[in-house]
View 1: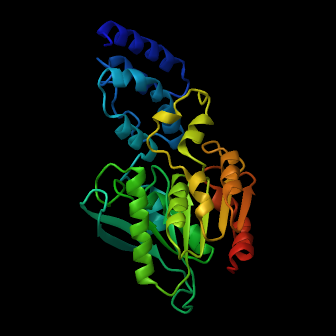
View 2: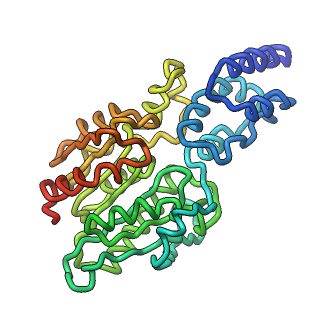
View 3: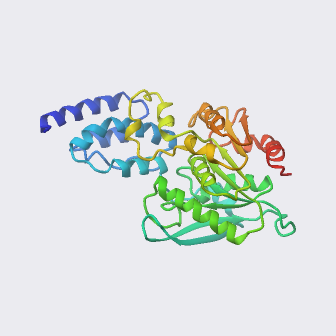
Amino acid sequence: MVGPATIKKKQIFIQHEFEKLEFLSPSALRNLRSARGLCAADRSFLSGAWMIAAMKTLLAWMLLASAALLAGCATLDERQRQWIFQPSDRSWGRGEEAARGMEDVWINFRSAETGQPVRLHGLWSPHERFAADARAPVLLYLHGARFNVLGSALRARRMQELGFSVLVIDYRGFGKSSHTLPSESLAYEDARAAWDWLGRQHPERPRFIFGHSLGGAIAIELAAQVPDEAGTLVEGTFTSIPDVVASYKWGWLPVGPLITQRFDAVRRVPQIGSPLLVVHGSEDRTIQPELGRSLFEAATGPKRFELVEGGSHHNTNAVGQPQYRLALAELFGLR
């Protein structure tokens, strides 16, 4: 039995370790110092943080795991889900402008995991040749952390410029979709529901899957599940969450087994049955390009890797439009 004095020592040690971590904000440190106990420190102070800060903080908070368990704190999984997804219903000015003219889409289904009814919100934007060409491709866009469909609308428009009619959806917990804390398994279920809906709406058209960042791991899982995708595209994506954590400054810490939201895309990518395009920006500081390259190397089917020089985690599909066009033509035969 671990006594209060031992737990207190662990808390003091971990607080000192936190203060060494350069990525923690002053407000985060204030929250930590004001906590009266380990479980009280388990508060959501990452609201509105960027993914890179969330991933680094996930690593830091893993230092708390042992002591948290000793103190009876049972919310480690919930906090990981919050940190990794950073679900948002906020709007972005340029996103609202980009979304103007897109059609609202509602996808209703009953969750096999929770047994509860689910309503997903999406935005649909047909390409200019959609009505005239019965074989014009459609694309399911799966966004990453923090940015909902409005925040992703500008990037979705760029995919539309490449020739796709695009459906971008919000997972549960984002935007106008059902309000619940998202998780890895729920996001997979949401992506599959959107894919099936798109197939029912456009059964004769070639369907493609696209995922950005965290959405890329969801896209890999979906492509491994379904037999009817024409192709899979991922940008700024990784091999797994433990690998992302390991790529940061404190990544040598043995926290991998404590991560519950693993998004193990590298294990699933060999099971994809369609051509795979992996795109990564050379200046991506959130997800290192080496992780994208490793994901590409693990794929066993037709594949292509595009490193976009000067591309960051957020602008690669703008900077790399010419490379996208060439890759789509040569790998998928799209023009």
